[in-house]
Amino acid sequence: MTLRYGLIGSGMMGQEHIRNLTLLDGCEVTAIADPDAAMRARSVETSGGKARAFSDYKDMLSSGLVDALLIVSPNDTHHAILMDVLDTGLPILCEKPLCTTTAHCREVAQKAAGRAAPVWVAMEYRYMPPVQRLLAEIDAGTLGTPRMMAIREHRFPFLEKVEDWNRFNIRTGGTLVEKCCHFWDLMRFTLKSDPVRVYASGAADVNHRNERYDGRTPDIIDNAFVTVDFENGARGMLDLCMFAEGAAWQEEIAVTGDKARVEARVPGPARFAADGRERAAEIEISFRATKQVVREEVSVDEAVLSAGDHHGSTFFQHQRFRDLLRSGKGTPEVSLHDGVWSVAVGEAAEESARTGQAISLTGMV
Image 1 (tube, rainbow, N blue to C red):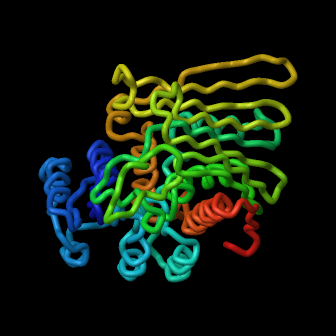
Image 2: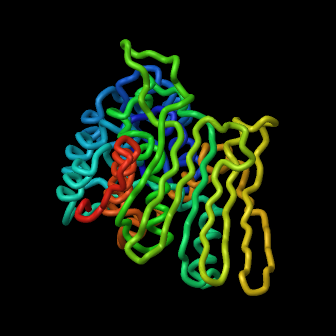
């Protein structure tokens, strides 16, 4: 059985999805809808000429060419599109963030309640091989009870996109929603508890300061420290810097329990490395009682790595989504409820960074 995918939106991340679906057995991109003519043409080329292009996604929906929808349009369009396509009987994979506001996320979740076809939110960082290895150690009890989780992402600035829509909070939800919803989801998933309080300090200090769009200066945060308290007493921390291209590791994710500490170290995309070469990720486990430290590389197939900028996670996420659709049973591994939470934490972090106040999450989801 070959699953036919239709994309709504086909910009930079859309191209990554197309490349990964082309690698994946039993999947084919048969239709693409995008208002930008250049991106439509590029997408057809990326699909190997197999996809049919539409300027309006509603025409694509009525074409009979797709078995599943993939929403990869700009963040601020997700709400309206989802409220429309939820009326179809098609399975949906929606790129993060689910919407740009918690209120819009709630509306989507309410409308989708009782829907037979699954809706999966694309939180692909869960599926990075080094993160999967970290999660396996936690599930095996290696750490004991996880008490602290620290994520450091030091990376390159936001990339150029069509009309540079990612330069403004109003279209993205803000950096701590747009970029960091991955990390709030990963913290909540790893620590197995809901967040209760967020405090953030952040600013727009370096990136895009000299850019102007209709006289407006970009307002997205490019660096922040964020702490998150969880209901079970665990704590999470994010150290984000988006003017640190060239850092040895793009993500360093550490979880510490009463028995041990495990850290996943993930390199950035090869195209941003000084030598242009792919590097393996690493896992390090430090045992409290014996003081033993174990390190190992986590390798990923080069074809999978070269298909995107997220260390293979897009491929492995699609693999799990495909398997869900093939089985015809079960529920999405990343639910709409997960999607709502990830935006709620990011929205609270943005408010905290603006006001200097800790923000309670009680009653927000």
